[in-house]
Length: 262
Image (cartoon, rainbow, N blue to C red; front, side, top):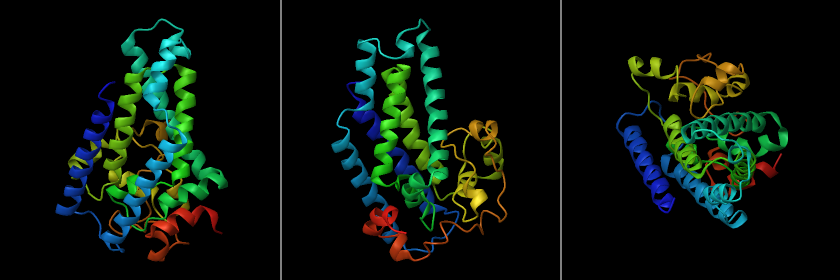
């Protein structure tokens, strides 16, 4: 836990670099908006979101987990289970929690106002995996704080989950197309790029599918899995129809104000 920052930063930078190099060498799709414009907005948004989250919630998730363990707060700190079982259960519960949180951000209009900043991107690449409104990030952290405290999730499980959450978000948003021989078996377990691009389709019933950020199990279990879009992956229309203008969906100020405009 003393090296938490370096673990998280190391995995984040490494996966980000790997995905962006892969996109550059063999992109799956061509962006309708210049990368320089999109990246300025998307990376600017993640920087502002990180600052906002730190100012709003100065205590880290792992620090809360350590405090809970020291004071026997939460379910797993009250029951006698093998440590490995606690970690596995914690990861599964956090994963299904984020799945349902994602669904709620699509279903509740007030939350969709925030989440549409993410879906407004006219192209999907690694930077899209970082493109979230600062208020959505703060809400997500609060949800995880409540879950960590209620369940008594150990700090090591929190660290593993946060690394996986960030890493897999970069992975499944990457503008790459895995070979079919790899993608087909992989999609039985993980959310692949093709499956996640369906989630970014302009067709509403396709947008409201494939909510998982890591495994595909929850979408299959709760009936939101979609294996094929109406169009091919090459021709899929990405983004939101009401935001075709690159000045709206590729400018930092416009993204920050998007939830507050009709």
